[in-house]
Image (cartoon, rainbow, N blue to C red; front, top):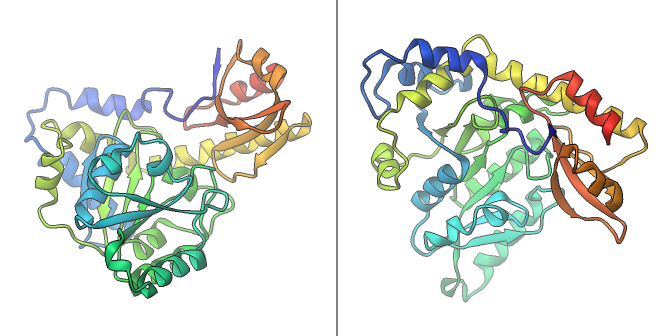
Length: 340
């Protein structure tokens, strides 16, 4: 069975497993006080060129989103998100369970439009009754988006400026950040993200790690970050497990090299699908490819290919998502194209 369902179907990059084994018997301090976690933090600060940034490590994306958003919002505030945003569609109401509302905006291929964001905030504060409504307290975006699309540097800067004008933080979900940064179509760098967001995270779970996300506060500070993480059940006693992984990912450009590989595989997949006459639902420049396929053909393909159902396209066709990763092989792509 070929599996293109997601980018976390494999375990972890062999270099990470090797490092975990080699350090296994070392006696290290807990809760992220070990040398490997400290090394990872310094490497990340150097990469984003922000020595004053605050870095913490968590296990997964939903956990990270929940902890960030509930701790930056006041009790009467909500979080602005594209209607297709992950926190609004695929996190089981985790944000709402904290007592905060997700305030959704229309998405454009997964993205928030900077002008529409400005209009939303302007209209809110121009409403004389706004004190009776949920205040917009932060803005959530993801890069790549749920659709595999990317913000441009100008869009990111414009959204950041709007947030700054209204004194609310911009938070970027980077679950697949490596694949966005290494896309052939992007003009956004890791430094840009650190500059134009207040909080973001570098995803590891979907980019070569067993588990783990590196949470980074750049232009926004939260007092007692470790205490807040622990209060929410997110602090690992064996913090080394996360620190070692990110220390390895940011040694010798591993994170960027394996992300680039996934993009190369996605480009190969896209080219092959188009040559076979398939049409794309969204022209994604990252590792997620959205393909229109006849229902009968899709049902037959399920015997041999594991993909992610996305939505109905029309009476006769559906959209499926095919995802490449750091571990995808060229022969996997060739076999999929021969099978589908």
